[in-house]
Length: 327
Image (cartoon, rainbow, N blue to C red):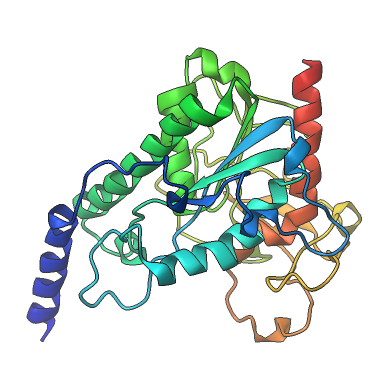
């Protein structure tokens, strides 16, 4: 039985190379989860906040995390761009809860891409994992190239991503910003959800304060007291505290917490609910209290990397853009 299971996995992996692999035409608005010229989930806001994309002075290129999962079965290793169920989850959950953070400061461009299946992060075969991620990255890269040529028009750029999206964002920063003139248009890169080394880039440092620009921030959120082996293979993991925007290990009190947003978007952001502290390559927070929070049994708050700090990140993006213009 186990033998047949692995044969199925091998067969499905081969589907990666047999599916249509031509370049996607990103002039097609259907290949974008968010565009500033189209009403989409990136235009939403929780109560008390407002969308300002129509007058925004910067662009946000947002690379969404994995929304292609479930039982591996006979699914190909990379999602088809037309998978309606995957696109629905991307739009109604991820774009709504993460990309909307930035609709006060920038016009949001979020490409759909043939993302790697969640199972790619569980297999031990690194070559197969990398092949699936490489396939996905080619779409992201093509989308970014199309964006630069057709949409950007020399405007400042914020790169924002999460989880699988962060892996692709790191490559975008290497391919387009490292040691290039485009770095002069980089306001900041938000790279939560995956371990990123402090020395990942030679010309893009880890942000050390809330006003620094042309730098990156990264964190992975866990309940206080947790430990993890995830990311230990990376030397000197960068961790930013989203309450202080520093990399020091002092405890940031709840008074600095500007507001978290629940997934259903039906409540005003709840402030003073989170305290945060950097510990051993991860970000420790207290377990937040809200209706139904007692049902949370995991100590890894990966899905809340953005939601828990929604207003703090939103205000920080504005501060960095203001600093960018002054600089």
